[in-house]
Image (tube, rainbow, N blue to C red; front, side, top):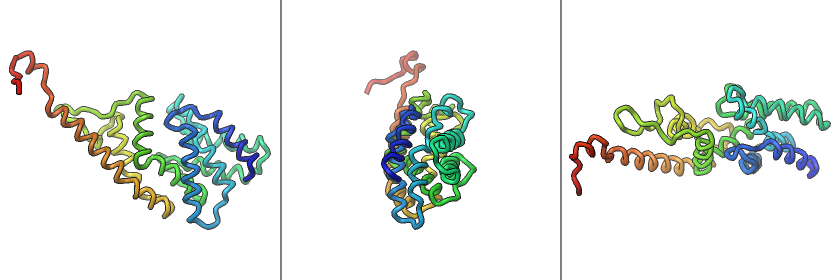
Amino acid sequence: MNKETYSLLENYMLTCMEDSAHDKEHVYRVLYNALEIAKSEDGVDYDVLIASCLLHDIGRKEQFENPSLCHAIVGSKKAYDFLIEHGFEIGFAERVKHCIQTHRYRNNNQPQSLEAKILFDADKLDVAGAMGIARTLIYKGIVSEPLYSVLPDGKVSDGENDTAPSFFQEYKYKLENLYTNFYTKKAAEIAKERQRIAVDFYNCLYQEANSAYQNRITLEDVVAGTVKKV
């Protein structure tokens, strides 16, 4: 891929990115992750891979405005139309479209091509470890979702069986389970290195939150005058 083509794709990507949890720096990290993974694979079409990485999240704005939409589907169509409009071959545009369609974690449409598998893994890696924790917290703040839910007994839920969205629910549903089922060996190795940091953070946050509720002074105690000074 020459510099002119890269700049064309990059500039289009930059016009589409508005979500601070899925911003241009996320796109660049996914691209860098993908290039690192690609070093360990044979037969990678780097033009398809780079284009797919740069354009993989261009449908985020539409999904954010209408949650019923899938950014992977919207983005794949936007990418295809853009590539065709700018003179790329149909076969190339189709391959990029497939990569983008299948990169989403919450998606039954699995990647088939090598480039699609690398994009999937590279995007998944950016939800792993400390970066994944940070990005998830940012996103939860954007959509005004809490850190955790409180159970009827007054304890903090660990998120395991929650239906209401929260950071803990997202951790149990997605973050805790994404360290397996990578398509490439290199991505699996990188993810394993990052896993401990995410686990430690979740455990510490849960313990701190739960201990605060365990030691809470209820309003009834204050009103009844039964609170004892230490």
